[in-house]
Image 1 (spheres, rainbow, N blue to C red):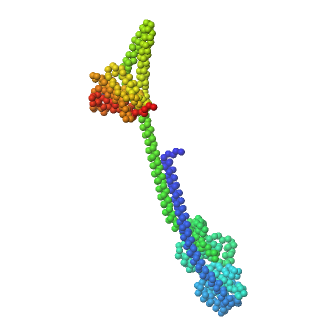
Image 2: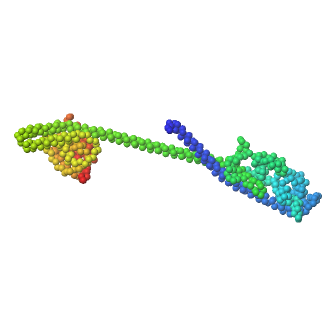
Image 3: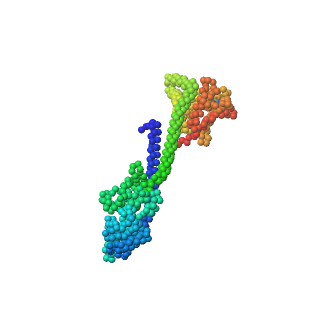
Length: 585
Ligand code: ADP
C-alpha cells in the first residue's frame, strides 16, 4: 500500500491524536478509580465512627426500661386500675427518672396498651390516656418481652426511638409495658457539622434520620403494597410524606461502597456512598461524600499521561528520523561504492587500451627492423636450397642432408620469431599473475630488438643471476623491458662506443633489474617528469611520451617500482624492482 505524503501525514497526526486521547482517558480513569478507592476507604472509616457513637448512645438507654420493669411500685400499680393520686405519684416518678436519665419521654402502658402514666403528663401533648396498642413495639413486648420501634409520635409529631420492656407480676403474667422514647436532635445537630451526608434507614429502606433536612423520609428503594399497608397500620411515619430518592449505581467499589449518581436528570450529583448496618436495631447508616473532590487528582494524572504520550511520540519521531538518515547514508555510500567500482572498471578498460596502443605503436616503430630480420633468413634459405639442389645433382646425398638440417634450423628461428611477435601483439587483460622468470622475459625482449642492436652495433653486457622468479604478466613485463631497452638504444644512438649494461640481482625479498646506458643521461629538470604521460624530448614521429608512463603503471600494478636516475660516470640508469615469487617446487 502506498500513500502520498500529505495523506500519510494526516494519518499519522490522527493516530497520534487518538493515542493522546486514549492515554489521557485511560490515565484519568485509572487515577479516578484509585482516588475513589482511597476516598471510599476514608469515608468508610468516618462512617465507622458515626456507627459506634450511635451504638454507644443506644446502648446507654437500652437497659433503662429493663431496669424500670423490675420496679415493685410500677408492678403494683399495674395490678389494678391506675387513677387519682396513685396516677399522679406515678407521673411524678416517671418525670423524675426521665430527667435523671436524660431520655426524651418515659411512659407506662397497661396490658391493653393504654398509657396510664408518662413523664410528659404536664404537657398538652401528654401521652396519658392514649392507647398505643397499634404500635409494633407493644405487640413485640407482649410476644418477646421487649420491643423497639422508630416512629413519628402520633401525639407529639416528634420522631423518636421507642424502647419497651414488659412489666410482669411474680407469676410472670404480663401486666403492661414501660417505654422509653429517645429523640436524636443532638445527634443530627452534631452530624450536620460534616460536609458529608449522614443518613439512617430502616429495614424498608426509608431514611428517618439525616443531617440535612431534605434527605429525611426518603425511600431508598421502592416500597411494595404490603410494606405500604404495614406503614399505614403502624403509623410509623404517620403524616410524613415519603418521597423516593432517585439514584443509580455507577460503579461498585467494594462490598458496602459504591459510586452513585443521585437526582433527576439535569440536577445530578455523584456521591461515594458507604453503608454500614447496625444489626441490633436493623438500621443501616449511610455516608454520602461528594465525588467531585476526586476530580483534581484525575486532571493531574491526565496531564501527566498527555506529557508522557507526547514524549513517547517525539522519541519515536527522533528514532525514525535517525533511522532514515542512517538509511540515506547507507544508500549514498552504496551508490558511491558502485560508482567508484564502475569508474575503476572504466579506468581499467581505458588503461588496458592505452597499454595495448602504446605497445602497438612500439611494434610499428620496430616493424621495419623486424621485417628485415624475417627477410634475411628467407634470402639465406633460397641460397641453401640452390646449393642442396646442386649437391643432389652431383649425387652427394650426405652433404645435401646436412644442408637441409641448417635450412630446418633457419625455418624454426623464423617460426619462433613470428610466433613471438604474434604473442607480443596480443592484448592481455590487466591483473594477470603467473609465475614467470625475468631472465627469460629479458631474453624475449632482446630478441625483438636484435635486428636494431645488430644494425647499430650496440654492445650489450649482461650480468644475470637467474632464475629470477616473479609473479606477473609475461607479455606486459616484456613490454616494459622493450620500452626501457628501446629508450636506451635511442639514448646511445650518438655515442662513440654505444653500450648498454643489464644487471639482474636478488635484493632481499625482491628482484632488481637495472638497464644502464652510456648516452647523454636525463636532464636534471626532466628527472621528475619522465614518467608523465606524453612527456617526450624526442622529435615528432619518433616519440609519443607514453612508453615510461605505461611501463610505470604496469610495474606498479604488479606491486613493484620503476625508478630513473643518472649514473655518476654519465648516462641514464633505469631500475625495475619486483617482489620475488617463492622458489619453484
Ligand atoms: P618516448 O620514448 O616516446 O619519448 P618515453 O616515456 O619512453 O617516451 O620517454 C620519455 C622521455 O624520457 C624521453 O623522451 C627521454 O627524454 C627520456 N628518457 C627515457 N629514457 C632515457 C634514457 N635512457 N636516457 C635519456 N633520456 C631518457
